[in-house]
Image (cartoon, rainbow, N blue to C red; front, top):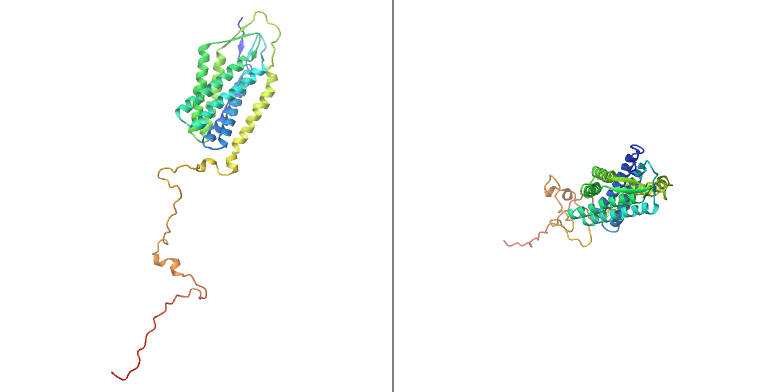
Length: 315
């Protein structure tokens, strides 16, 4: 018996809210990735870890909000709590691997492709593991080609978002990268849901064991929601800028100077007074007084004494 599925039980409320949460998590995470690329030292892994948790929490929250609008007409749906939270941990770990690769390797082609692939696979893995935690009187069946398409969408969009985050700087780039990340997560989710079909058991009994979506709503909002808020505060008030000079502006110890750039600043030679000859400079016109002299008294050079000849009557 095939079940009747409805992915938009509450209309556009759940898709729009899910997209906003995905964009928020992506914006915070990609912003942290951008900061990490320009940072060296102890702050770098901290920014990368914060970015991984932000993106992982954002996509997990997006998935759960979107699943609030998914229903089966013939049977209620519950969720297995351990599997649901395991999907959150999986998303954070796999997204973190991709972000750390790009953070330490830079915006190279190999790093972006590898990091974007791992991040996209993390988004897809989180989605299908979360679907595995769904409990109802039946089983879920998938269309393999549509599942493959959803994974490709996640990988391509995640790679593009990473490239925009580490290659293009500025507010517009951050906004564009977050929108791309939101499209990646939302597009992957609803493409994957399009591959779902439900086969119900012949005899429907009582509700299957597990937690209802409403019972998971509160911890979902209090946990990742509060974390995303704190991450937004950290990104807005950058500790590197508050504590002093950013480390990316300090020269690395032992680093060789760039070609054509002196290792130390060169002091310019003193220039004569502009528009005046050297003899007419103020320091020559107003000599410095020595102790015991009148102010501005000119220096008188001593004249050699004339030696007088002795008087003689002889010619």
